[in-house]
Amino acid sequence: MAALDLLGRRWALRVVWELSQSPAGFRELQRRCAQMSSSVLSTRLAELIDARLIALRPDGYHLTPLGTGLVTALRPLDAWSRRWGDENEES
Image 1 (cartoon, one colour):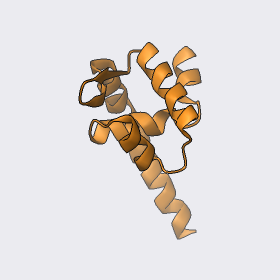
Image 2 (tube, helix red, strand yellow; image 1 turned 120 degrees about the vertical axis):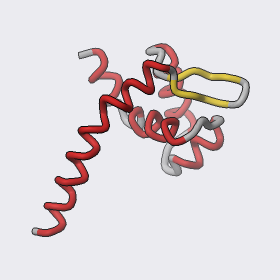
Image 3 (cartoon, one colour; image 1 turned 90 degrees about the vertical axis):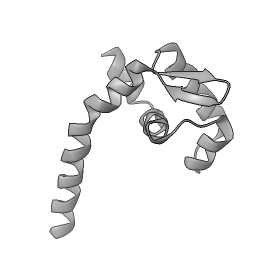
Image 4 (cartoon, one colour; image 1 turned 90 degrees about the horizontal axis):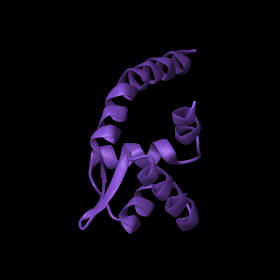
């Protein structure tokens, strides 16, 4: 339940998703998530670091092995959501 609580927070999964594409610094992440305020981004980054899903290195934020495992675990949900979206577009 703790994992679902963390991942259900606004923008948390988006940050993980963006970092799964490539590492990024704070400003780059904020640019990729154009509607996110800097205070929310700071909070989410701190929470995700505390959960050991991401880490800050000299070249920016990166997924940890746990974070990469999370992205792998979410891939079936991503595939399902794409099918769901396609079916809803057809109706």
